[in-house]
Length: 333
Image 1 (cartoon, rainbow, N blue to C red):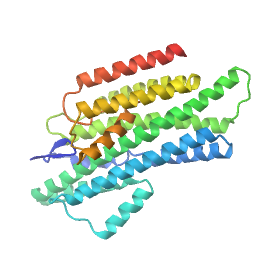
Image 2 (cartoon, rainbow, N blue to C red; image 1 turned 90 degrees about the vertical axis):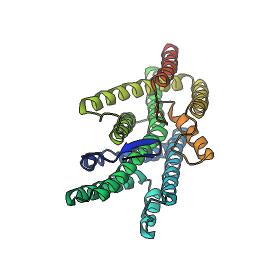
Image 3 (cartoon, rainbow, N blue to C red; image 1 turned 120 degrees about the vertical axis):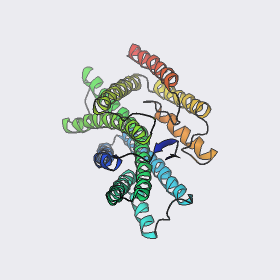
Image 4 (cartoon, rainbow, N blue to C red; image 1 turned 90 degrees about the horizontal axis):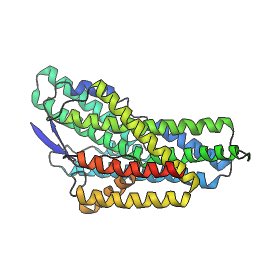
């Protein structure tokens, strides 16, 4: 039995889906990252570093609003589905509170776990109809949560890694030129930790998203532990090189950094709109344009296909562009 949800076709005949989700619910570390970003924003504000305070705060609030908007829109789309059960008022209240607190992925992970448990219980009772129904809901929520977390990492964690690394490199440049360093070792430690945590979060979110897609599809093998480790390593090295290259360019030539990022954003958004038009993620053309623009911003760091289909040449084209940009940044440095 198959269905399609937000562009992902999946089978309802997984025998272990309700067990797998018990490990997936531990994968969201967005709250920890958010607290780190807020703490650094406070440090910059206290030290009168207005530029870094503004940038850090901007890439906390705007990505959070975008992620919350997409999450709420998906909830509303579910309400319009005739096959979906209408949610009670109290649950909508919890959703609103969680969205305001920027904990939308955690709520979806909780729903995923609840559906997985229900599916397991009905399977034990021999009620295969309800077991498949709750398994479908579980895969729904897991896919949504993974995509939501990935979008948040691209829009928040990746820019934060660049911002904090730029500050660290600027202080290193001052020290090399015998100028006064304006940050202490404790704050330097927080900034370095933020860079590492942000890159790891993006790499892990990419790995989990691809694992979830493979778990949900009946025509692809599940991602093994070894494959997941290799994929995570690839994502980690790729994101690290990208963040370092862009940060080096931003320290030396901020105007060029801004120009290249805007041009990359525009070209990638246009490319997504042309090549991946009519993605099943969005219900209308207007929503699709907004999603493409947001995803185009994410493409500054890494690539993810928003639509099912062959991706070999898309990956080749994207990473060729990134290789040229990274090499140019290192040559300039």
